[in-house]
Length: 416
Image 1 (cartoon, rainbow, N blue to C red):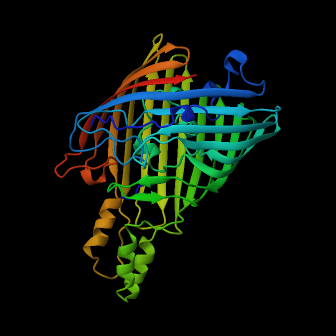
Image 2: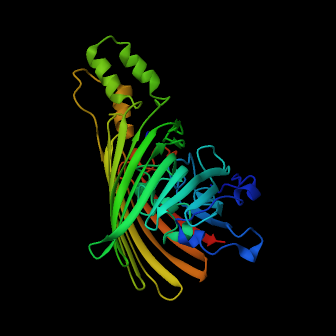
Image 3: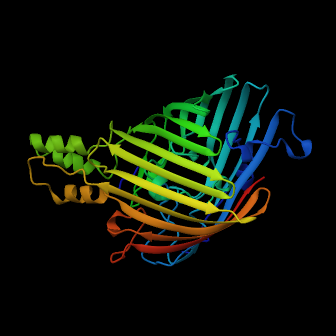
């Protein structure tokens, strides 16, 4: 959802706590393998994962961020802020049907520090061999593999692009999901549905925080898999529970004019009680050393204070031994929600319509080196272009910024 340095100040507080958490049973690379050394009870398993990263932004006029929860990032030099993540998990499986899972991660977010956060905490139950139910704090699987977006080892590039994943910035909800699969059309058909309440915060372009707490979330998807070919389509929707603090004075001013047209405009601009819906379709294919992905996402917002838009993301890589060069391209664009309300719009309203728009595209070029069984180094160059700089999905741009930035990233991804 979009509302509109070398930095040694990043703090991964309570590192021990941040590495004593959770389980990722839906990510085979994390959930499998049992307990190292046999020092835990038979039904308990512990694992850890992380990304150690350094990003270099050549532009001093804008800050490069990984996602919309980050108020700032890399500007005119090196920074560990955008991509460094530490996480861990513990799971307890008393039987083949039941499991208890706790996961926590530490990454830079809207609090301007990397405080350990409980990201998963749920009870899982498998009523049969082909279905599962989770209840508690669960990951939001709104895009292909987004349930494991914090485990950098599970995907090829240094990060999933903000132009695509940023259109619905949700990583967890408190609720339930149900997954089932069956044989169909010569492959495996998987269906998933989820519902719950959000609880995270994001930061807009002016570093104003917006809380998604208690916002209702529903969604689901269908995925058909034939061997290494996956086709998936789904929808996610969130009903915003709160008004944006920066918007309240404007809405009050419009309502105070005593004009029916102004009242209607205020109602149309309000965020509270409105829905944002995202439709996504993805195709992923692996054939030997070749890996390819193609994603499409469309967003529609009921509030005129948010713009409708779309994104397209393509990624391809080819493995040569332990090294996989890859190339990716992503574009995101929106359209104005402005319409005739029968009155001359004051400048604050015109500004709101302009600031809600976004347009950005990026090239990704890099290589991943799998130097160990569960560890990889990735070197990546991102070339970012925002044709209208005011519509960039970056942070704190200076007047006169030309909308371009080049970012070089080096990441170490691992699973323990």
